[in-house]
Length: 125
Image (cartoon, rainbow, N blue to C red; front, top):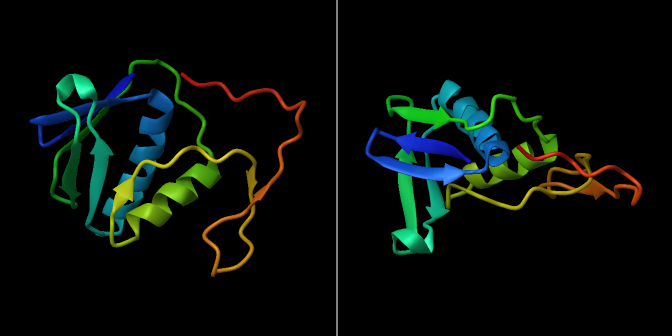
């Protein structure tokens, strides 16, 4: 489990693989000087509910990973997370899509090819 810290006073833990995808999406938007919100559901151990933070180029963000290996990035998941970040609702976590990403039309956010049933499962840190 890795940790995302916002402005040194708000922290939340995520699986390293998810955290790597969130970092890639956030940093791409920050490099383009695009501000957005990021919302996640809080764990019941901290009272439940949800937290939303405002991400902009001057905010302090820390991505702390528990594992030593860099997780591989799934282009389909990056696309799905970027799609939410670009929406009026802002970035929120969506499940990792299974299958291979293929852009078909601009009207559809994403489509996927089927993964063969004999394909090995992806590894998660």
